Length: 197
Image (cartoon, rainbow, N blue to C red; front, side, top):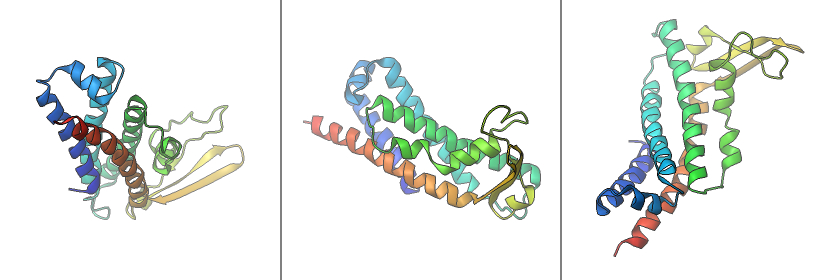
């Protein structure tokens, strides 16, 4: 289990312990998390589940044999892992907002893996019409070298090329995510321990 997985588990386990202590009264969990209402509580919990699920996808991606996979499976895996990182970004932003944690928000919003996701994994052929954003075509041969690489031909200045190592993008994101989760763990788990008789 990675450090990131451990922190997510520790937070979820801490919340579960509080739920058991309160006999699973949602209003007590709302109070414990310091959120405004049950809707926000469920939003935070859904976001934690999303973090766990997308961690499974990312962990599985780390086992990929890029050389021997078919191109179709590589596209599925690259699109999937890039979107998993985006979903994690959105989940951690929701959790941070609901728990009133304002540190690192700009860094989370500006993470490079999501910029690559937006260019390569969320593009459509008409992206960029009348905007400064443009669709990028993912180079299938570069995926065999663990690269997110490609170009756009619909930029007003002509062809634009981008390239990054997928594992480096994920590792950089994991550090940002881990740092934010550590803040969340510190806030929630210290609160749990301080309320324990």
